[in-house]
Amino acid sequence: MEELTHFLSCDWGTSSFRLKLVELPGLRVVATSTSDEGNAATFAKWQETKQPDDQRLGFYLKVLAGHVRKLEEDAGRPLTGVPVVISGMASSTVGMLELPYKPMPFAVDGADLATKLLPATADFAQPVLLISGVRTPDDVMRGEEVQLVGCGFAATDQEQLFLHPGTHAKHVTIRGGQAVALKTYMTGEFFALLSKQSILASAVEKNDDFERPEHRRAFERGVQASQTENLLHNAFLVRTNQLFDKLSKPENFYFLSGLLIGAELRSFPADFRGPVVLAGEKALVQHYEAALELLGITQRLAALTIKGAEEVTLQGQAAVLQRLREAGQLTEHKTTQG
Image (cartoon, rainbow, N blue to C red):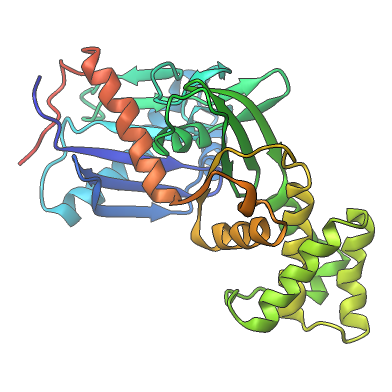
């Protein structure tokens, strides 16, 4: 089998687009192209064209092709034949091509995820591997399943947990090499709505300095309050904190974050003692790590491993791509350049 030296990693979310040229086997990012051409915006532009549905894929590929050309310029090499691996919302109803969800359970090495391989064509010179999401009877995820694969969970009988903070935080139970249960929490979306569109908006101010002592204390107050009172009551405290000069607006920002993350973690299984992988964007991971410690959860775990979002996304995409190559599904494509 011809050695694969690079692939194009595409994280095409609802509101943002990221394409990276990635070197193998070390997963070094050679070049990156980003924009606000998320699936929602791209879908809206496609709808404006009044084109038939069978032309949607081509419309999206033109967007993708523009970013590939930028990477070719940045990297100083042609990328013809280099496979593009796409995870996230690109396989959804507003994406380039809707794929059905893979029903849970699924293998944590990515061996049985639902995928679609689009061969290279004259109009788009790269084969595209589109990875679909996962569903239970009442829950779904798209993109996080690839990040879970990238965490490298051991195929043991010991129960393990994958925690992914975000707009829609995910808690996934892993057992015997299979992801067997999923719960989604709208923690990040609730935070955005309350802090930007509710009566609380004037009482909070975004701040990125979590390590300032007063910010950390406000966050911890929010986490602690979440364990003893109703969330709907606690949320109003954000307003009275400002009215009565109890907290500054940046402190209230962290107080609200603590309230919501603490409310999410109230459902963390009290009898769980196994290992946990917490993977996501650095700022959110810091908040969750602090909350887990404050609530005494960390102390009872076999291990708490922290991983970055980019790291696990690239590892997961590379793992799924390599499995398809081993199965011979990419052998007809030239996949190395210069």
